[in-house]
Length: 86
Image 1 (cartoon, rainbow, N blue to C red):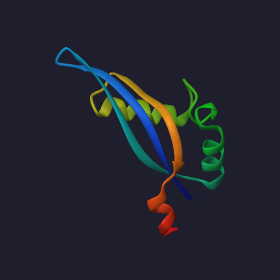
Image 2 (cartoon, rainbow, N blue to C red):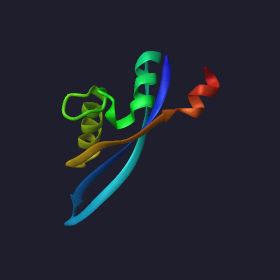
Image 3 (cartoon, one colour):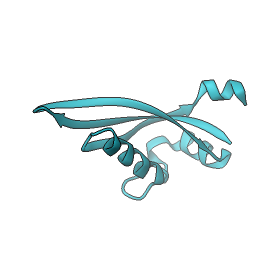
Image 4 (cartoon, rainbow, N blue to C red):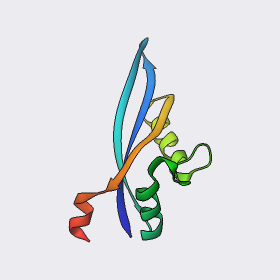
């Protein structure tokens, strides 16, 4: 099991002003899926719009945080904190 830090971008309008936020989340995944994501990044089937599972997770996270646009994948990298524990 690997832990991958995914950076994503969200956008929305709050009180008439557009806001863009960049966030990170660490997700556990199998070694195989982690390797595929790290190698292919936004071209990974895990991320690709509209059916990639990670795309769906990021969209849901954006909605939970009050953003009506976004949850768009930016990058993936091994989570250094988790790597030191493994």
